[in-house]
Every structure is written in structure tokens, then in C-alpha cells.
Length: 354
Ligand code: NAP
Ligand code: ZN
Image (cartoon, helix red, strand yellow):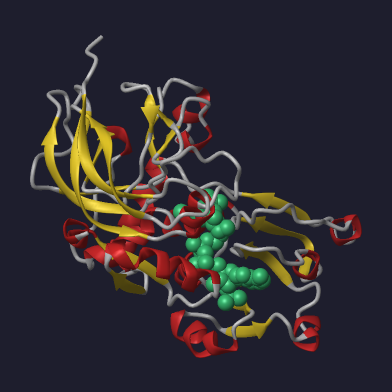
């Protein structure tokens, strides 16, 4: 088997859980037959980047380069690539490889494959080195994991669809959110604001739960029919037992029993937020009403393409604040204060000047 060599590209990395990110270099591989090399133009900033950079999930190896909401331009393709040619626009999300032979991959659920390789924090099987994310000049990805982008939308606004978009689209589709359904979205951050846009586009009655009073007007503008300040016990009580589905997009410790109690009989709460600490569940929150609690991880490649095509047809992008690469540490601090409306996106051209 051809063993590609590594070459160096510029990136923004952190050497430890407590150090800021700074300019660095990382290895990328020469192209194998099915590989695509992409010059990264924009990269979204997901709260998972922060959890990972600061080792909040306890598996980070350093140096670490986050970033998995990647859009860019194809610069080179391997000889067996059929979907892309140099000059095309292309997107990459949280997955960059898998052997595609397991039952999950065959069902289009590559995210659950035992051989799946994440964009950062996994192992590049060709180089036997860690994978490094999108805060970098270029990335090399197997073509199965490269997405075609809608041509009619702003490129920077598309980037967050590659994680925040698919992570909310997939469970809303799985739980058949649509007309006649009352749906709650908890946490109006990067994921939450995409959840509101999709739930509204699917025809549901959408209620946003936020801790930030300052986001109420935006929640309505983004598509919510109602907004509840989740610290207001009386406002919460008015919705008891009434929701078909709730999508929990919160990045930090919070009381999920307060939301389980809002579900109707057979209602479901799906967690996509991945806080560092476990969330206690009171069994009575589930037993009364035969309610269920589940999780969801991004989405497979076919569904990600379906989501991007849907966004193209319905003119859906993320609401973004464009930043330079050297503003990333400040952006992380603002994200921790829920001060992001509603996704930071890095203009990767700014990496050159760091
Ligand atoms: P984000 O932009 O920082 O948004 C998180 C939101 O949660 C905040 O804007 C805030 O909304 C709310 N929040 C924050 N701290 C809170 C607290 N202490 N109590 C209650 N609410 C709080 O983060 P994100 O990028 O959307 O990511 C959200 C979570 O999803 C992260 O844990 C991330 O790792 C995870 N994630 C999971 C997947 C997956 O596949 N399952 C994929 C991507 C991300 P309000 O101001 O409205 O209260
Ligand atoms: Zn993400």
C-alpha cells in the first residue's frame, strides 16, 4: 500500500489545557488515491473546540488543533477522486475517514463506525499521527467525507452548518419534528440558533428556552413562536407536560429535570450539548409520562449533504461574527459568557499574518 509522506502546514494550536492557542505548524499527508486537498477559507468555532482544547472531555493529546466547520477550495485531488476537481468549493465537518465497511457506515451512520476518524483528536491511519482540525491552512480528506456546498449562500455563513447545522438537523428529522408538534430548543448558542431555524422551517411550533434575556428579540427573529427565560419558574410551569420534543443544546451544567417535566406523555428530550460533568436525572422525571431521554451525535455524510441542500433551497445559513485567527482566545472567553450571536467564524486568510 502507498505510504504517503507528511509535509508541514501552518496552523493555530495549543500545547496544553491551560495555554492559549498560538501559531504553529502541523503535518498533513501527501494525497492517496481518494484524497482531496482543500485550502481552508473559513472555519466555524464550535463549543466542542473549546471543550477539546481545554481537555474537558479528558482525551485531548497535545499539541491540539481544533476546528471542524470547514469550508474551502479544492487545490488538488488524488487520481481516483470523482466528485471534485481543483477550484471547486468543498466542506468538511467532524468526520474525515472510516473504512466504510461496517453496518453503521452502510446505513449512512458513519459517525457511529468503530473505524471513524474525527477531524481532530483521532489518528490519521496513513501517517499514524493525530488528526488536526480546521484552524489551519489546508486539510487532506478522503472524498467520501467531503461535502458539496450550496452555490447561492454566503460561504462564511455555510461553515457552521458542517457541525452546528447537521447536529440539530439530524435529531429534529429523526424525531419527526414538523407541523402539529410543539418543540423546545434549550440554549440559544451556535447549535441552538440553527435548531430554531430548522424546527421553524420544518413547520413546528417552536419555543426557545434561554438564560439570556438579551436574546429574546433575536429568538423571535430567528423563528421562535415563544421565548421562555428558563430562570423564571412561573414561566416554566406554564409549559408543564406540553412538549412533544425538546432539543437540549447547553454546553454547561444545568438541571435537565426542569425540561423533562415539560414533556408530554411519550415526549422525548434529546441531548446534543456535551457538558464536562454528568447531568443527574431524577427517575420520576421520566417515569411519569413514559418520557424518554436520548442523545444524538452530528449526522452521517448523506444526511449532512441533504441538510446542506435543504439550506440551499430554503436560504438558511448561520448568523455569524467573523473574526481573525488571532482573536480565537478572546472568542473562547466570550463563548463561555454566552456572548456569541450566534457563531464565530474565522476568516482563515488571517492565519497568514500570525
Ligand atoms: P455555544 O454557542 O457556547 O452555546 C451554548 C449555549 O448554552 C449558550 O449560548 C447559552 O444559551 C447556554 N448556556 C451556556 N451555559 C449555560 C448554563 N450554565 N446554564 C444554562 N444554559 C447555558 O455552544 P455550541 O457550540 O452551540 O455547543 C453546545 C454544546 O453542544 C457543547 O457542549 C458542544 O460541545 C456540544 N456539541 C455536540 C455535538 C453533538 O454531536 N452532539 C456537536 C457539536 C457540539 P443561552 O444564553 O440562550 O442560555
Ligand atoms: Zn462542533
